[in-house]
Length: 82
Image 1: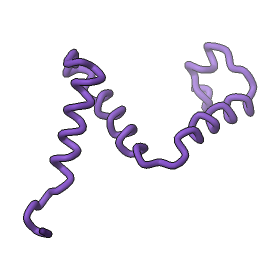
Image 2 (image 1 turned 90 degrees about the vertical axis):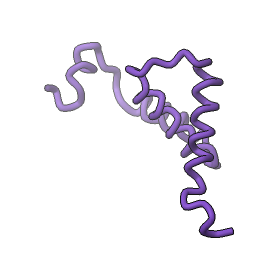
Image 3 (image 1 turned 30 degrees about the vertical axis):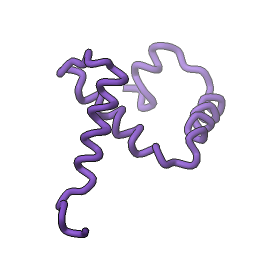
């Protein structure tokens, strides 16, 4: 019934996060890397219903071949040349 649970999806997301952390990392998680774990979880959570999962890889390859090669110094400086 509507109104019984004020935050209906919070429990589901917390459960998915716990299962993902324990399943993927098998409990070997470090607090210093928690931000990275959460970023990856959010990326996967947001893409779980995407109909075009392969499109991201296609776009990355398309961009990679559209630009010329860079050497290490250019990569570290970035596109602005700082």
